[in-house]
Amino acid sequence: MTITTETRPGSAAIQNRRQSIQRSLIILVVITVLAAFAPALLPESSQTIAVRVLIFAIMAIGWNLMSGYGGMFSFGHAAFFGIGAYTDVYLLEHFGWSPWISLVVGAMLAALVAICIGYLAFRYKLRSAYFALATFAFAEMLRLLATNTSWVNGTTGFHVPLLPDNSWSMLQFAANAPQYYYIGLALVVICLLITMFYLRSRTGIHTVAVRDNEDAADALGVNVMRVKLTTMALSAAITSVAGMFYAQYFMFVDPDIAFGQAQSVQAIAPAVIGGVATLWGPLVGALILGPLSDLTAGWLRNPPTFLEFLSGRGGLDVVLYSILLIVIALVLPKGIVGSIRDWWKRR
Image 1 (cartoon, rainbow, N blue to C red):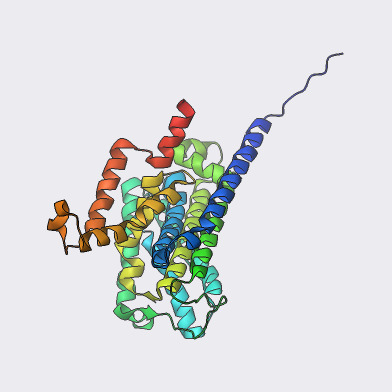
Image 2 (cartoon, one colour):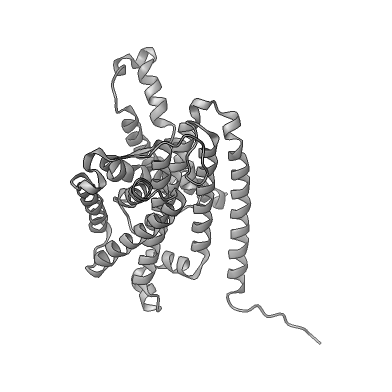
């Protein structure tokens, strides 16, 4: 008697998906363990750079989910960053709420705003450059609104009230305390886990399908509007977390810092350099761009002989940002991680 083993349709795909999650979890554990030693290895003066890398990473993870995996290019993620930052400082100063509660409130508020923007944009069929311009315009609108609104202190912004002692509940510690780094690292890990499991969920798979061919996905019964709005809401919520953490670490926020174009660029650039639509690309990009402004500031203070003409000048980090983006676009169009992944598959 011959026994035939039949494979149920889709079982191979499910098995591959499980193996992919397991591999990603192992890589994440290794990265987290290695990163946990950073405060012990880095000088105290580098703690700020390390925290900035983590903030860049959270912002880029949020942007990458919507623009990389979802195909909805955003040039206005500063809006969600600013909502997180302003929600934190406003609730802290006026009601004394813990930043941990503000994190949840800010994430929900950013998600709600993202759904409103997305609904209006998709309702009127805005795509590609028009959609990017709409997100940019909305971030600028929020910046102008905050600048001219007295109940959020207008151009003055907010200072986070100083506490006499360290407090985990109020997320406040001494300057350059390692607790900030470990909290930022934990937030990055949580954001990566959310992204990882979302992309393996049914909605996440539909997100990529809609990005690849919206009309075909619609014809197959995918609710395109719901999928897009869900992805935008999750992306906005993640980005708002970066805003909350920024406000608590730097203890100050104003309209230009929170909603300025620089924040949108800092969400985009790490993902593009590291690799759009790759899980680890935003991390790699943040590691490269995070220390860039401090390195260039050091060069400008004591430039080598051939760069003496740059002494005392500012903006070199922005120039290097631009050069890096051009080089990556020409040499590694899929970013560092995307190019390595393709090379690994071809070898």
